[in-house]
Length: 323
Ligand code: GLV
Image (cartoon, rainbow, N blue to C red):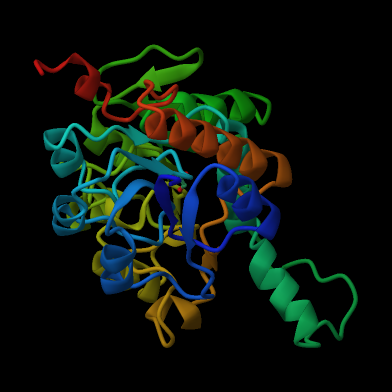
């Protein structure tokens, strides 16, 4: 009998067919996220789980999945998975670091330009047939990245890749990292100072208990009037209610790829605001990056199903425990 694995997100048929040559596959193909109850039911007797960000894997689900040997997520972030519960059970959690650094850094820079040069707003304006005069000297004026101070919160691989790109724009770079890191041309600063001094603050930390609401109401209030917040990390890095207040008053601008609740609920206050650029969590969404992520996730799944160490493991301590 083939071992069972659950695929908790819709994937192309050829991938499912490939998996089915090795495993009994319980694949979700709904257009919405798999519910917790369905996931829990599907995991009965399963040794492997392939999942992504839209499927939270709670401690209860992990504890109930008594045969589970590996969780493989098609993402670098693992904040949707109850990591302590997985580690306690000795279940390795595979993820996909490295391959999405460049795409995500590109998107952060794209959001910076879209926000500071009001690109989404201008596009909308043209589509609404408002362009009924020729060139106008004061139309949709923005600010220059080349003259800005850009503050990077988190100087891991993505923060560093953003810095590398921004050097070409000639802006001043300042940055903060939990464990101090020296990055060429990035002036290290205390966290509050980054928020205080930057014209653009861009978030690049993983979401943990420590970084939840790192862009707190207090820190957003420290930002300069007219400054821009960019978030390509996780929605919960930001106190969203406080950001809504700052955007609503017109004091700040923002470019956001991630939200406290995804998909963004209908009637969310952001939807009515012109000073925020909204993207549907597409930081890694290029053909080559998504295929590299999937490749890594499948390798992790296959390794875990075969009791081999995962090449990209988010909790490698599972391999160093006393039996
Ligand atoms: C995307 O957000 C990821 O964690 O891969």
